[in-house]
Length: 313
Image (cartoon, rainbow, N blue to C red; front, side):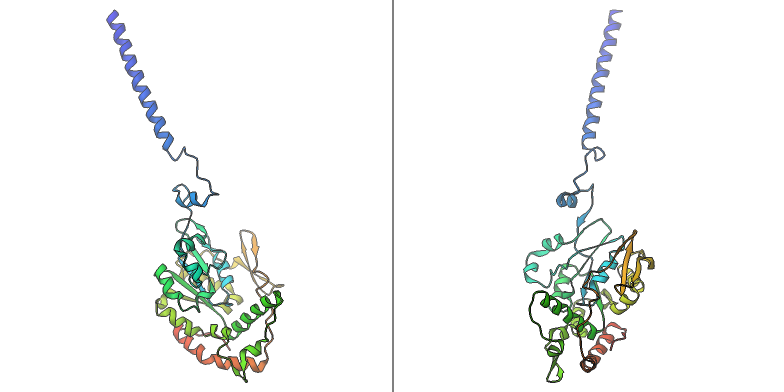
């Protein structure tokens, strides 16, 4: 009888020991399980970019709007940002065309990008890239597979818009600036050295890009068509970027007061800032005709390069 009691007590002690080991093991596993760990703080970029719990991180762009200046790059960027799979850099980065920025390397460039989830596309736009000779090779070195968007408009109108922006900036700073025709014409002829004119020679700049990138990697957006009716141009851009069609005609409405389309998403509307649609500086009919005649041959070269034509002067 005594031996039976002692044996029973021994069995109970063994069971208790085994139970304690099991409980300790369970507690150890639970302490490292992500289900029980507090999530990383979303306010810290470093924790966000390195955590598997929150997979958002800053990524190099998979697409870049390279130009043209005063061609509608801001409008295109904001419209692409309507897509749920797209995140955009809010400011122009000027990484590839400003030496001070480029010397800081890709880590600096990546730090200018928005936080994105896996599968989302990062897009940045810097219209100064298009006309900068050193940029195409630098972009290729960053990512040979990057997709490039080039939005163009009537080069004569683009030139006048370019001048208008510079004039506005000079007047804001209380600095004098020459009238447009004084810059554009020299002894009655087109001034080839005028920088705004050179930026409108699209064929010269595109030729440098095509020395580095294949034509199918550069999507040309009709800036004039984007202003008249945004949706068809956005649908083409979605296809080029391999994005599922998510942008709809209902995302746009025409603002009669401003005179151009505004954006509508999730019940919120957004119009481009007041600098868009600013009245152009005056240019005489005679000077405009000279400008249009000057651009005919360069425009023809550009049309041949991109395989399409545009209704320009």
